Length: 431
Image 1 (cartoon, helix red, strand yellow):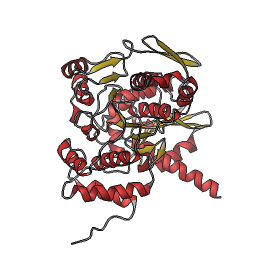
Image 2 (cartoon, helix red, strand yellow):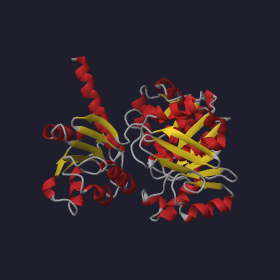
Image 3 (cartoon, helix red, strand yellow):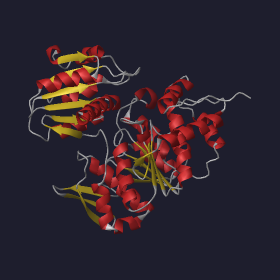
Image 4 (cartoon, helix red, strand yellow):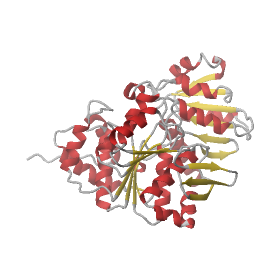
């Protein structure tokens, strides 16, 4: 019998996983279900929450994770993509999974799959499910990768689902209208189980699907309410009203996500809402990379993973809250994204554009970005760079202390800059 030779490093495994299946995205759940069954996973967690949506999934996971952790529950979280380290995708009680646990689980999954191929994301999903099952968790919080109905995370039943928002994105997979995209995301609903929509006006297809399977659809401004003031915000549902500290997340829209998270807790474990101190601490201790993350004040450096029209609009709304500053934007975009919709909300805010090529086969070439955006922006204000290191070095040498640098367009763009930023800081500490 031939002994398998496994990769010896995490990166080696990840590189290999990306070659295992012929397609990066393959909406066929039979393969992952088959391997899941071979792993003999008895129970992923006592309670499972699945979160779908165009934008806001990561922040909703972080809010739930922090509140549940503060209340001494054991919590597993699965999110994607990662910003810096793959380990970010799987967390236990807010701590990233150990690399040794990942490598051991990769071997177990590879042995179990035999000749069944898996995509990179399917491998990650099974890894999370397997590790969760071994930890005997109180809660597992699962972020949908793409869509909902045919996403790998949707192979198991949840106790409650949340749909954060519906916008136009991934049209080649999900359809070209709000209603068709909503129907794909509605696939995370379960019969007779609650689904919470964080927004205020659910698309009609959510009601249609909810009624069809007898899921209870709960939504903002109908079943729960959020109201923000300068120093606090208030959540109301039924006869319950709770005043809470302001979120450590930028953007008024984040309060919709927090309202949905509190509504989920009210349904699954209402006694948590009785402990005001732990609830306040849970809100205060939320942490999330790359969502309007301010790295520096002089000049101001802002990172945001905005990568579709809806999130670019929200980024613009956040930026407008401050008085006008001279602004350079570094933007890197994936090939399947609409450059126009990412640029348009920002044209009256950004003075100079630095286009970069993402170091990934899926990345759009910087010159292509420039060509596509030149219908909106004068060519003299657009510059191209091979990588984010050169772009950021030039931008920072040009900006004054009261100016602003925005880095957005993709998770990869933010990841590349954060990695560069950390290496710079590490070198300064070493010196």
